[in-house]
Length: 323
Ligand code: ADP
Ligand code: MG
Image (cartoon, rainbow, N blue to C red; front, top):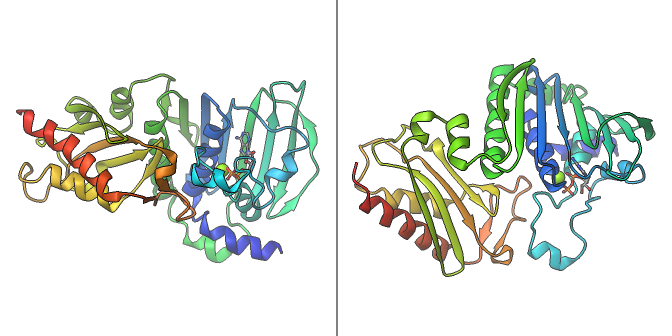
């Protein structure tokens, strides 16, 4: 059974950055407003996350590591309007099956914390522990019993780059959250809660980009398009600086990429790509996130409408701005 879990885990957990993404999403789902991440050796040695969210009660701690034991979806109808970041109940089970994990948690109405160790699927007992309200998860030596997967991991720097990217996506989508990231005891980002999106872009992406943003807000036909986009003079040699979020979730979508390209048509130097941060809000029922385990791919019920709303919102502003 353990081996099957270990293999299946590969679908969601590919590298340390996948662990970081899943754990950050869990903290957000637990209504935390402070999340601290500490990484050692690009996450190969340690990924540690501490949040001040709801916590997990002693009775519920063992279940959190059971596959498909999610507390977030109860009915089939829930599946058509997913508001939480997670809903498959797969992440903790997968992570627990491929690493040495310790979870410590304390709910608001508990006088003490409890913890559990799980080592490549071998679950220990829940024992009393001490900690503040919230949850801490330590993930050590990812894939250490799976040499073929362990070998696939890159240098600490490369793995850290992937982790930073996941951190950046979640930090841009959640400016209300205090977020800290450190690597080998060095603080890389320390973002206070309640920053503006412009401040986050300045701290996570670049000051030059922050200083050349155009704000867009356009609500029409059931879609709210909020965006911070750079003037055409500030462009990049890659399309890496195109961040799109749908109801707070980072997504990649070819209709939206196409709309961005169309909006900047004729305005950019050859070989240059626009820098855009787009935050879409639309009814949870009007798209499907249950397409791929990592949930960055989604399916719109009406992709053409999304395309035309994004294109129109950006194009109008770009044609009116002179630089
Ligand atoms: P999912 O997020 O899809 O529900 P996970 O495997 O990521 O599944 O987590 C399993 C369950 O463990 C969650 O449904 C939640 O009840 C609980 N949980 C996980 N992380 C946290 C956390 N940081 N704070 C509170 N509860 C958590
Ligand atoms: Mg989750």
